[in-house]
Length: 343
Image (cartoon, rainbow, N blue to C red; front, side, top):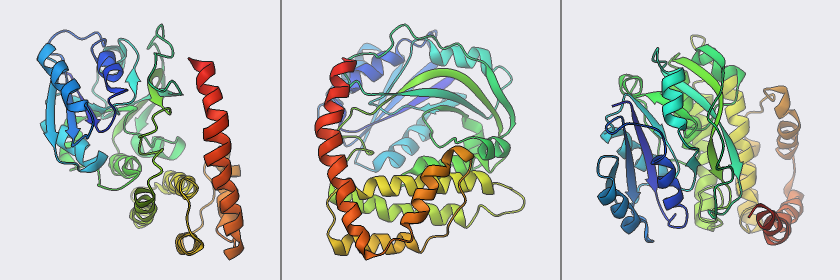
């Protein structure tokens, strides 16, 4: 079997059929691929949808149901059950353009690289339609070599824009960790093993920003505070390993930490925090090491984060301003206008 597609499923009934339908249009012959859907204790109608697809296409879909373990736990469950030579991960509110997976395997995986990285596009369709139904998967190789070099040269944070050789993951015991932003940690563990890595320009994945229930968009205060705590775990994990002289991954590691700091600040303005809550998390963040921005394109954002690390307690006023802009200006006014224009 060539490919196993792991699809974690939780609270996405509006998006799930579009995702699964896209996986039926990947240009494979029967038996060449499988789609392993992990129902991670979803509270909505996802279980019934999954069973329908499994019953109609038993040669493609396999459904595993488990109590909620989070995104990382669902990915690990799917990977453990996979039979394909390669595994890839697709979030259940996203989709893949037609014939993309078969094209990538046929044109870029004949000599079996350990990791294949491909491109993606962010969309705001709210699950209503395919953004570009006539998109083509064609692309060219832009890098072919050591994964450490690739990790240092490019931002490669996401697991859903890559193929991983299953034997490579197993031999190096690489699994998703059960924390927020586990993609960064997973790929850090992947690339520090010096995998044969290939990067191609094929723009095939569509990442949905219109899902109100997504992890990135949740405004549940307890979940946001948990995510903020996880950020410190993640940064500490990479910080303690990035200066290994045998790896020489400092540049890529600094970029990963900058990215997680950016997520940290995005999360801070997703919910209303009291001054005490704001101060507690902000003081933790001020104690983190400072990192120079890498690459140059990250400079403006990283400088802003660096300045924010030095803010005093009066910064609570700025936090309230950002919270108001995000909650009321963007999501109540700007975003609805964007969605109307795209549908």
